[in-house]
Length: 256
Image (cartoon, rainbow, N blue to C red; front, side):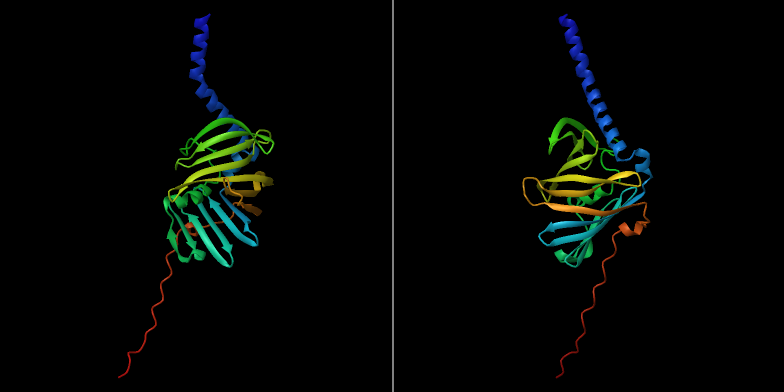
């Protein structure tokens, strides 16, 4: 009898990783289906999202994010009359940040480019996660504001760690915590995700509230419009050349 119990425990120990992986894949499959299904998601070649970010009392930043397969993204947003650009061309991230005194385009560091690079993935990290080089672990269930949610730990190929909470009823994402290192400092960003609406048969969240974990400072993103398969030339995502600097005005030599 003891021998049979021991053998059963050994079998369970061997099968446990397989069962866990199967559970992860089942949850992801239901998440993909809840969003609209793999076929519909794969038919989307580009996404244009128009939104407004509330950054504090009286400060709003309207913006547009364009994503295109296979891995292109461009974000433009305006703060107090100045328009900034952050983009990913498939290999590098670049930006124009005029309110930081930088009016010319410049390459972003590897750490700075992580967020815009992740935005370039139209399907999100869970879809085809293995082929993308990510790892996903199921860490049980948690209640998120009274809602039961599956907790998935996603270790991205670039080393960042995301925790994605999936509603156990709707199987849609309702919260995300991203841990990344910026300029040598580790940060955790919490995002509450909601107000899902269908666009051409695909569910998109129209409200995201984000902030650094442990602080009261939150930024609310309100999406007003999502358009699918909009024309977007690849040149839109390439870093432009810096504007030529004006020559210094010539002055006549002093007369004797």
